Length: 91
Length: 228
Ligand SMILES: [Zn+2]
Image (cartoon, rainbow over all chains, first blue to last red; front, side, top):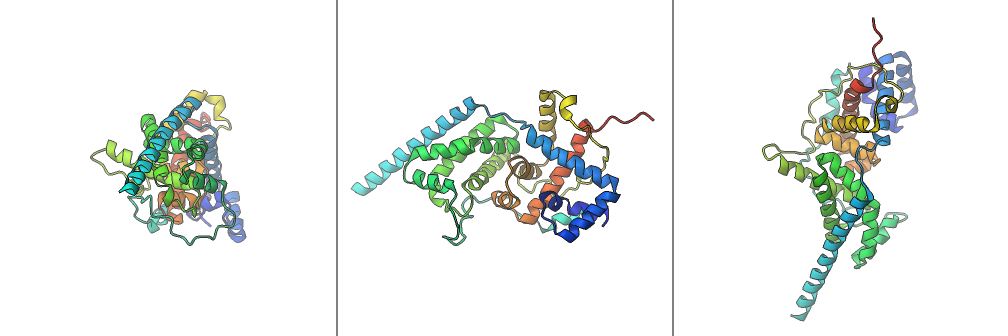
């Protein structure tokens, strides 16, 4: 297994979706190739740093503001559709 | 290093438009145990708005963040969050429970977000496929090890800036896959469903997104070079 082969398997390796035989080859390559070892290590850190530091806040006030607005629209929608159904039924 | 990396992406399905309504066609009655959301959806469909409100509480954060990651614009993300839930409410009948309700919502959110991007950049079309043909940045070049704890080198706000700036530099098609799969923790299959992509296409984009982010973050996080 060379570096290109290894990279092609990187996603499956991270996801643990790799069969035993291939895993042995992957580990062998990792043991002998410092570059790929660094790539694995720093890619893992890339994922971890994004998971650990949600770069966007979603404060409670915003959540309730949005929820209020959505529910208003939904209730209006229910009223108008019920209204339509009723008037259609009357016809 | 990876000269053949470009071949990985060739089985891409062209999908510049993602149809919101076309997913629920699998045979009914196969699911073993219904997800708790299914009950809430049924109640909401029957006119119980409180049930729908519960669903909003559960997923508003995820929808907001997804929209923000794709559009990179807070106001857009707020509007999109409202639109997504309102659209979902109007289309509840179309949700058949073959996919998770959250995946269905994310799919609507992705559509809405891409539409916003298109509106903003009037001259350029924006799609999931934009810029994904390029290998630029997907081939590892920086093999420096990183400092173990970026928290010790950067303040929270500096780190936040770095992370935002870095992910904003990715093409939307990569950014979205990374967001759903790695930040929002959707499975590969769910990500594929939410984006209307094949599983191999998701894997290929995820690989490139991760490698590009890694390469860019390396500038900040690499260990200081030892003086020669
Ligand atoms: Zn290697």
